[in-house]
Image (cartoon, rainbow, N blue to C red; front, top):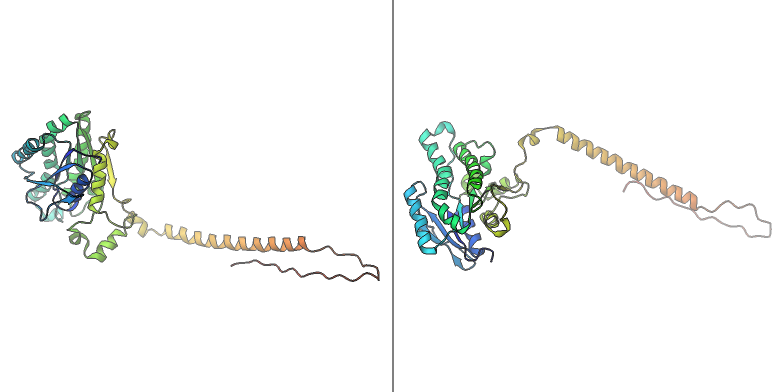
Length: 311
């Protein structure tokens, strides 16, 4: 398979998007290590293979250094680091003090930097890569998760700079997911009807599955992306339809005009069709004959019926 023998670490890889990423790498043949503060409720498996779990507190640099020392001892190398761990509760800026918002920044921006620095030596030796997991929240206003959106915007900037500083030995790219169905989707979108309704706001008509984010990560880590570094790959189903289009009247007026014009064009085509049939009938009618001598039989003409008009 594409990543046979490659060693991959997925932070926050025990559930949700992280577990989907881990499964995709397992299916691609990689040896996968997933890490988080707590072990998964069930092992992360795919294609008959199981990810190894190692505990880590990504906010603690010493714990992070120990993680990669254990990876090096067990596997002897590291080819891919996926910085996926992150997230934030819904909290308006005024409802959280500076310390709470700072913890969100620490998990979503500082922790990926800490992990990348700790893994750099191993990645450089293997000529490996880093895949950051960003968010569309970093590209647009993110009310209720402002610190999270700011951290994800910073993560993309960090990745672009790392891609320059660490080239050519280490490639660095960012996946920018939109909405993804996870174990916690109901907290954000409600029941299945709510999730489906939210999905209909996406051009592709649904929200993503975790393994689809994983497929994008596998691509960026594979040889097929050997010349891609410092890039941000949007995986958001086409994004979001701008809200102002739903409120604007110009588009509806244009659509109505178009419908009237279409009806007019249809009527014109129907009228033209009638004219063509009538012209054809007139053309095909037998010419009028001069009176025949008395001894000749009289002829009769057939009747032509014009067919056409609106259907």
